Length: 137
Length: 137
DNA sequence: ATTCTACTTGCAAATAAATTGCAAGTAGAA
DNA sequence: TTCTACTTGCAATTTATTTGCAAGTAGAAT
Image 1: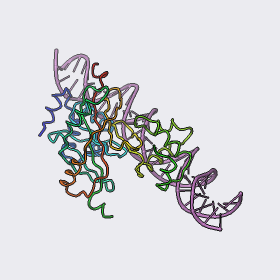
Image 2 (image 1 turned 90 degrees about the horizontal axis):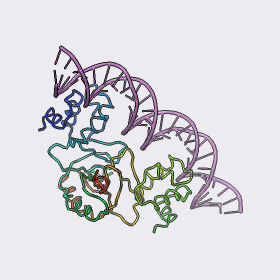
Image 3 (image 1 turned 30 degrees about the vertical axis):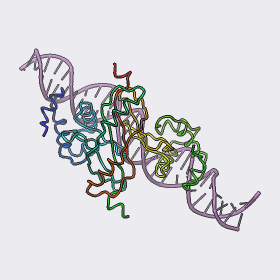
Image 4 (image 1 turned 60 degrees about the horizontal axis):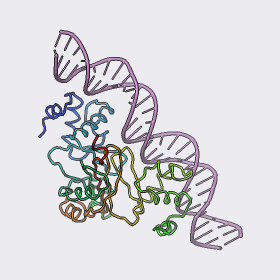
């Protein structure tokens, strides 16, 4: 359990109401959220502030951006469950987490074979398919 | 080498100038392109047509959408090199391909462990890091 | 070759996503 | 308590994507 104020201070962020609120919203979420959803979750934080805060949190490594081929980005706390990814139903958009992405060897090999890359910092991996319900339709 | 007209007909698409043009642009590209880039590559195809065509090609399995955490989607031909992915420089945006993503076991295991998914159709995997040049700055 | 129709396209306009500038507000160091 | 650099909200842009519709046309049928 991350103590919000500490997490913010540790990274040089000021502890402000909008940031705490956004952090809390993300912490309660059980799936990656859109900017709009995060905004709804707070009480009155401006959309722009949500954008800026999520971007800052992302830079700081507090938050991860998730792209699920929708028209907009999603965000979730990195928190403890560091290296999990998502299975997404292409029909109903349901999202489930999965773990067991052993990407280190893949990343290392890719790095070695690459022509001009020095280091890998993060990765994204998402699976797209059909949930049991949508598969029968 | 895909014969454009055949590829289109085989999937029930009419062979039209915009489609052939868009296909050609993608075929010449050495990296995933944005809608705007594709449009620039053609001579006068409307932006909306590019959107619609890319979406149709994607549904048909001709084209793959790539999300690199920019504000917009990128597209590239699926073509022969089926299962390649990208290493992206977070600083200068340089893109390089890599292969060797053995995702089948990961996908199978994720599917098995999942609560309600029936099948996996596609996946995305991107590596984010720094190229040699940007890493020194 | 001509006809006909369903599929396509371009244009205009709407909707949605993300960014920028700036003045006012405030957390936290001094 | 003071002061300043960091933050925020609001307005306005810019960029991305979608939708409606009339006009155009590929390709099947004749």
